[in-house]
Length: 256
Image (cartoon, rainbow, N blue to C red; front, side):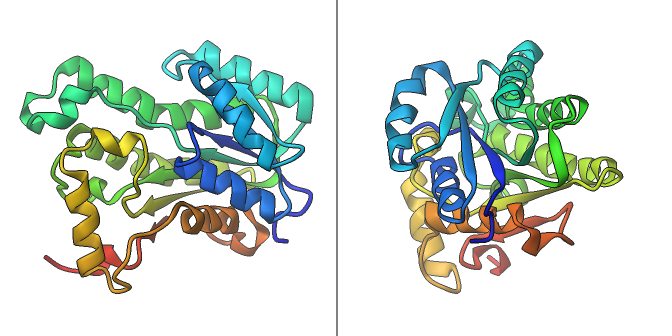
């Protein structure tokens, strides 16, 4: 088990279809102590899910646009668990109208909101965890992104811009936290049917295109993304930082 005796925080679990839930299960299967965070409205649902992972726990993380919410959640986790070995950032949000309408119609508020929740929150979480001295030596941070940060994906709109900012943030953070021996990487996961994906216009057609064009001719699963996350948490990836790793059955290498 590649995560034996490690403690990892999985941020962003919503339900059993969440990519973050796939990561929680993979980390658990690899021997990690799993600590989840979720929005208050999902707390009972996540508690029920965690019955499948005995010994795991969940904490409420309020609106990540408010620093005090992040601080409060991390402080409680540190109090209960001490230092941790990994953090998964699987947090993103954009207003529905900004996903359904043309990108040019994105409001200033909608643009700022998507950036704040989907990108800046990673920076805030990493900084606070570091300032609280709650990262063990060699700790690894992972954030989820998507191909819409690199190419125009119909309906992804402002979220693509936010994910592009997230990916660049990962690179700059890698330089900063590398001085202390910590790592950070991103996983660009192929499209998966999640609650969030329902907000993307014609999402079903995106799945069909990936199945048709990806070298492996199938869509990726939450379990596969979770396994890649566990690898990045583990010491097996100790020389990898600042990278965006595609877990998409090869779709991203194919030209139009």
